[in-house]
Length: 197
Length: 224
Image (cartoon, rainbow over the protein chains, first blue to last red):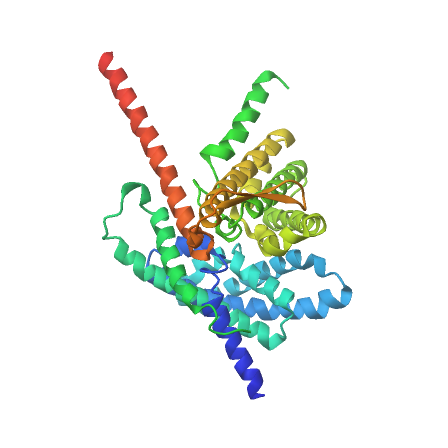
């Protein structure tokens, strides 16, 4: 049992730091550059992301392994996963609006953005490809979510400072953000080889 | 079909390549622009996949535009897109398995491209078959162009070579620099640098062109 726990811990660390979605897998970049301008939005987005990611990892694991695999229609995985995610986002949107309007007011807009995001779709796809167990899929979802949150928060804190910096005119805005992301990615390269799964 | 419509078709194609270039101008669908551009071959194949999906989706939506009820249009668009993406992925796995091993995940993620859904919603659902096809062709070629530029730059600087595909499963590697290349450029971090620098280059060229145009307008005004 303890062996299993170390394995899960390794999975979380590897998904969040070594194979960080933003810096080494390059997923979710549109959202990453879109919401990292302010710390407040970055934190809101991170919270929404981690929860949606874990829920969608769980639900799509169940559907994939209990419906698609027995029926041998795994080639439909893209269509099914997109449907599951869109449905889930819509559902949590409705529930949040009823149960906690305050939270909805703060995070609702991110929820709408999430359904067309590649990270959320990538988690079930990778889970299916690596044939993770249910618990492993959850751990992978959590780790990826944490990694994305970390990336967003680092980036937001740098970009808030960058507002005051004197950037050459052609580099203003997005190009500079790209170069900075490159620098952070370079730092994250240092994590590679930390754990060999 | 008069000569007028052929001109507009050409304009539509050019619009996607230059004016509304997905990556350099709209800064959408950035993920594959970095993920798969560490060799020219991967960049070209990924761009080709996007081109194919964009054209097919635009054509399908355009043909179905009178049948789709406006209230359920978005789920139907998603269904059409994921259908074509599945077709692309299967074609790629069958025809070019070695490329598929590297870019397969990103091909599957074409589903989540904002640009494809946006073209279906804004253009194909309101226009006839031919203009929609031209629009898809333009946007797709623009994307292919951006990916090719980035991967050309990265592979040349990072490895000192260029991998040019000569067929679906064959390619030819041209080596230009035999001394130590800048390895950083093919590392993950280098992708961000490359896109940042190329974007800044695009901005610089645009700013110069705009300044030139402004100066010309001013001079014209002065002579009048």
